Image 1 (cartoon, rainbow, N blue to C red):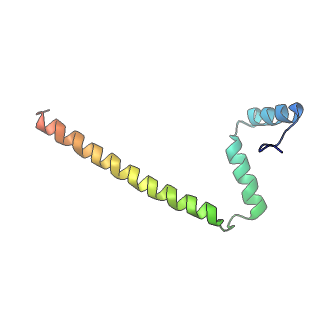
Image 2 (image 1 turned 180 degrees about the vertical axis):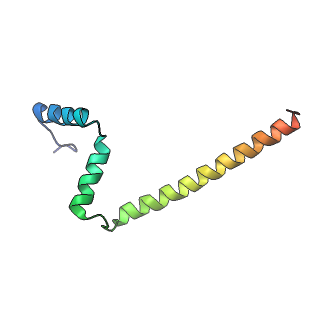
Length: 82
């Protein structure tokens, strides 16, 4: 059995038409449906929690890199007399 489910063409066309007509991204609709199904305050699974922690750490590191790059740019501007 394949990894992905097979959908009939009319189902796919209907899904595309629904997204285009509502103008809302699919991701938001799926997230909304999951919240409604599981309850707004449903706890995160272990894998979701691990992913959230990883992304938070990555976000912190990216912010620090941005600060370092700005500092270097300011230092270079000052050294060049700009």
